[in-house]
Image (cartoon, rainbow, N blue to C red):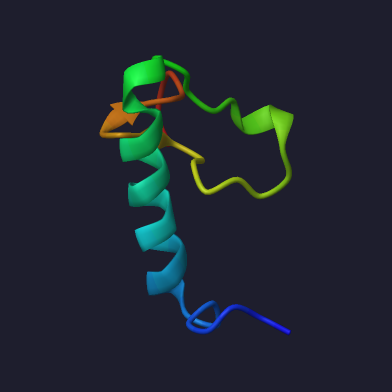
Length: 54
């Protein structure tokens, strides 16, 4: 029982973009260590979430 399209990476990349746009006005950003396998490992809305080399 999966949402149609959720079997492909494109679905999650699109979801990430939609969520970033919806949250833009809040100023909130995800923190990678707070959840397992987040959509945002290194960047969020074009900004780095981690310091140093990837």
